[in-house]
Length: 559
Image (tube, rainbow, N blue to C red):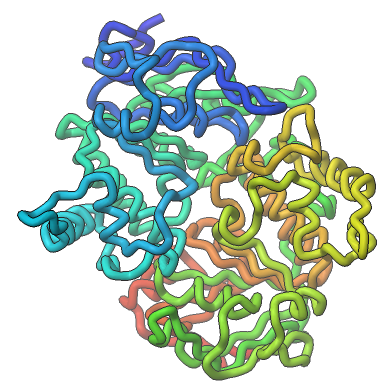
């Protein structure tokens, strides 16, 4: 059936710029796509939505030549390319660019070298036209509103959000006319996300075609022309966005659970509101209602006059003070590059502190290593699950044991008790709804979707029963239902006395979960707002330097 609004048509293969039919892709133990079709009309902004593991990223990777489909055919601009997309290089030649949620930068190369890679322009004598490349990259960066990126810095010195910006620059630098974006705003601050979508709208107006995967229904409603919904690896509907209600999209995306129809009320991010009647998948490990509880007055964790240097030996965090109470979630807000990454790494022990002290329940941690802090009750959810949380060639049981190899209760010790680990992880998979196919705990981590990988990381941190949890972008890459599960899990942990430091670029997430919000700007904490006073406008003014009035009582210490 074909739908039309003006010149926009859906499911019309004759006018489609991108035509994918009967796409099936299998991985060991998992069928990612089952007979999927996708028709994208030229010059449109086409969203692809679905739960974690629905096959969204796999579909984009097939179109980009990264994965071969097992069954199905692909056409680009009327030309069949089913047997021609052997690699991303083949896709790039056809004007296709992909920004994946798992970035592919080469750590040892500089930012500009990563941008140029594969699209180098040589000067006479074989020298690279580096200045020309930097000028073009700077122009694109300004159009994106991404700020001044350090073109000479090594890629491994960049935050996850900065790496995402570089990936977008790479695609546009190569002149991509078909841009595939997988969770494009997962690590962008609101201002950066707005600037990105403004650019993408300009590109579509100039004839570019955008296909983007997102879990944020607000973005789907605000920017897309059409939306395709995948569920359990199958296509379950193609719709014109302007004619479709959000609740209907959710219902098609998630379906029903145990025969119960959805009855949802969603907030601005597309995450399900706390008083929703939406049925949860799996059990919260704490089985606690989402009811805010006042924290105790007892300090759990204290940061005193801490200064931290970045990889260039410049001060990234300057003389900050902050305390976290028992049973409190403190959100750390700020635009990317304000010092959040360095602060989180210093707290968990992967970055040294230049000066100042850290205390957990009155005990100084400043010189303790990661393992020592873990034993004392510090756990973390890293912002980059591939680099800092998982070994993709290990199975789920082995990944779950990481950091607890000597813990007998987890199946570790002098000899690993694999049957015990498998039993524990199979139960974790059930309770945290980690979707792994029929292989269970022996499934390799690389065969999971990004969202399901993240759920395993969250489970491992929570199940270690910490006293302090440092959560960096904990719902990055998670769908609506999984994000809600994480929110309830963090809230349940807090209500049992856990202290949580939440680092997130998602202001709605910060506002929803935090008892207090500490705002960072240029390496300093410029404001600490209680929940009742924290608004998006107030936080936005502080995080951009528009409001310089400090609201820190006693330098951020508890009153």
